[in-house]
Image (cartoon, rainbow, N blue to C red):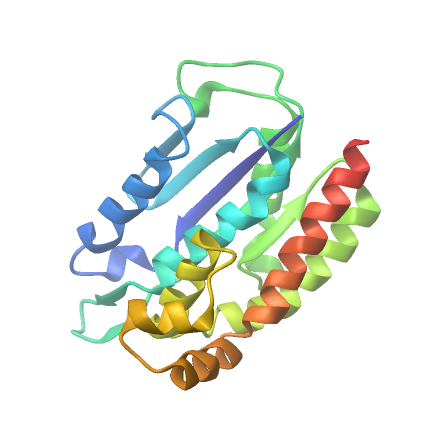
Length: 214
């Protein structure tokens, strides 16, 4: 069983400089596998990623969201704002492996595509579809709630989240040194970004996936 993330960059075609998010995203995905077999970017702003360890897939989706949200881009009206990303996680089997991920097939790919098609209608930017209906209902409710926080991340909040995801045991004091701010400043950003709630959902996701696989 594998996981597949299908996503796109929100309103990316209105941006003046596409490279500001494209190169960092490619660099991140390159640490997870080879393109185009394990991941692929298409049509400029659409991407798909295969994740072999399904317990890790939500964490990786959060890493992508933090990477994109910390990017401040300028649109065609010369207005600067943090960017957004829409992603669907599909969990299931892989029945065929193509030379490109876009040629591979199986229920994981189908579930990811089906959920991605529903995201706009559901007015959410992150969702899951798996073989387990009750799991989907519960996790998607949590993701909808924490999505309210995540979609409002500022650039500084996204930078903080990115550091925490990459260094799970890091202290606020060390984060402060990395960001050049006091520990009290880290604490305020931590609360504004709702770090505890987001990490709790990620841990719950991981725990439930582990239980379901057994």
